[in-house]
Length: 428
Image (cartoon, rainbow, N blue to C red; front, side, top):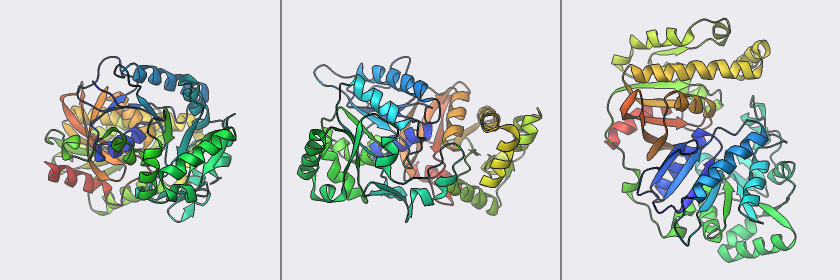
């Protein structure tokens, strides 16, 4: 294996988001669920190690990330170091304690790296950075739905300030003026920041053109930290160009289902659209779960009556007020864990019933479902919507493999659930 780029992602949907952009730019990519215990597929250019570290304690997030780094560095070819990419959410999900800053610092120290960049910009999904401030569509991050996120409420759009609170290294800015001027200006700005003692620089980007101008300036940088947007510009640094072969997957077969745990605005719209289209959907009840009732068993029995007629949806997606009411009764951690475990059991049960095309919505939900299915690695395929590809993976309950997509809660159009299956049919 001639590994060119080694990636560490802080959640499972974010990992596929990153891998999707790399594939679209010409890289052959495998996503590993956790740090691989053995070899990954031959003939790949990049490996994305998917961790579930976004919302855990910073110390544990650092430990997991360093473990992933150790494995990735061992995969480089003689005489060439693997460039490392630390991927976080395009809405910079974190708290004042971390985890973006602490993990970045730890990776920099391990790589003996005194400077890196940070930008969650992903214009294709309406995430842009201007004068160091993150926008979601036309809104500042702090005015968007992320302001009321149950785990990582984002109340400040100033990324320099947000990241500075998480790290001991000085944080600076590569603004839109330097980015618009191209590679030479970006490199000059990096040199000036380093001379000022800056260790991490937020980078402005309001379009894909900005990211493509940034990419060449990152060639040879030991560590890049970003959302998935920068990935569109990195394969060219290795002489790679877009090719359909990079996204090739086996033909799709089997039954179809959706499992949704995200409560984001985008996913709520997708659930509503699926239900409004007349397709079968069933909501799990967290309070019944807390009472010890077998909600997963109820959902699987229900699904068994509907799967033959087309895709079904099992969901815990709800309005933020309803989520907060449940959290108030059960506690944030218990409520989240109960729902994740139930949805993971549903995903595993659905696969056991013959589902071979599975859409999973939500980062935490995706992590729980992939672990329940005991998926070790996934081959990345064609894009459904920006940041969301179909993948193919083997599982003990589906030894010949199943197609699966792990959708970030904030991503996708309202008709994503139905569009995903149609896209897979067209692809094959």
